[in-house]
Image (cartoon, rainbow over all chains, first blue to last red; front, side):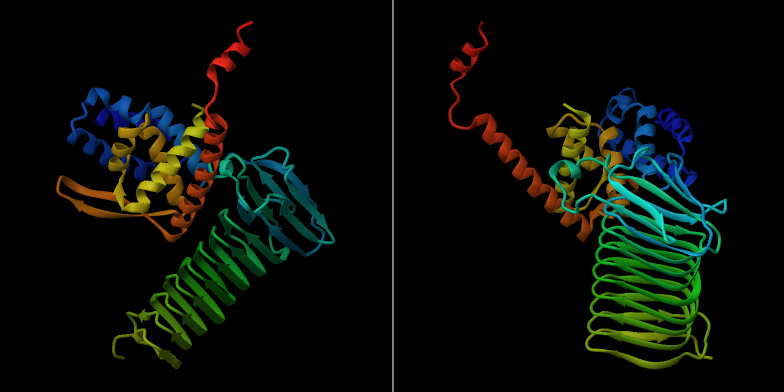
Amino acid sequence: MNKYLNDLKTELEKQPLSQAVIDEIIKDHEEMIKAAIDDGLSEAKLTEKFGEPSQIAEELSKVEKNEDTLDHVRLFQTFEVKEAFKVNCATVNDDITYKLSKTNDLQILTNDTEMKDHTITFEDNVLTIRSNEKTSMSFFNFFTTSKKKTIVIEIPKDQCKRLFHKGVNGPTKLESLTLESAELNTVNGRLKIEDATINHATFHTVNGKIIVHDLRGKQLHTSQVNGNQCLEKIAIEDDITINTVSGDSAINTLTSHRLHLKSVSGRIKGNEVYPKVCQLRSVSGSILIENKTATDIDVEKERSVSGTVKIVQPNA
Amino acid sequence: MNAQFKRGIVELCVLSLLAEEDMYGYKIIQILAQHIDVNENTIYPILRRLTKELYFETYLEESHEGAPRKYYRMTKKGYKHYRRLSDEWDSFIGGVYQIIHKGVKDYEQISKRFEN
């Protein structure tokens, strides 16, 4: 078993995969192989049952490339930026990443050399990206990832004043950007925001997931229906509103002037949440804030019809 | 069978198993291998992809045999995906069946068409 796992590790290390992903894959295989050996599989038949390590590594690299690495994209189009601009992007299944440009230009990178099913224009200081795919899916669309495009939008520093994104299924990532305003929406996909300064930020999902790590700004509004959200290291000067219908929200380390948490039946759980003023309201969902440090939080409203709503702090 | 097509069918089979109950990776492989020619090389990447797409979530559970096992659990989003895919499959396979087996085909007559 050890030889097989070592061979697999060697093959995985040849692929553009992070160490954390490699470790997880090895751990998963160790568990599955142990179960197979307990079940009577001989060491000699490991390759027959589990496949050639090189093939596994290649196959998994394709899966991981869809989101975690951008090595497979190439420069598709460059636009010269003369003044502040806006971004309007509406896609269906694409994997979209917004990140900081290393140049003064607005650059579009993709894994598709033609992008025939997309419209990309930069006119009147507005970048428009629109996919022409239909939202309805046929049988074969479900069985293939070949239609899914990876699009990376590299934004020059301090030049984008408003970013509007609307997606359906694909993941969307925004990293290391400073923006005046951003509104990101997805129906089923994942919104991931990392290390960003956005003065006015709005994130919304229906069934997908919102992950925010290290966000600074003046206002933040997040909402979800059935999806989940995970907010970590949030520092907002003015107001934060977090809404959920039935999905769950986890908050870890947050500061703001005002915090408004609203839930219908979803759970909101927060740790190290320090607003100056807050309102907590739910119908049947629970809202629980637990802090290790006692601070003065002015609780304007704290009410629920049948859920539990409370802030727990050590006595000052 | 075309590899992409096979992967799609295996994906539906994996979804179908996890719609019924949470399972660990090797059990999924075992069950599928009893019915179709498939190995881990096909199934594990599907599990990873569907987990990344939030159709599954994972958790560890102690096992009598030793180390804890990673279980896969279908999410609400995964269930919706499964139902949609399953309906598409039923519609597709129903159409295929109609074309291949519509009525009682006269195979003698058909083979005569290709004799000369």
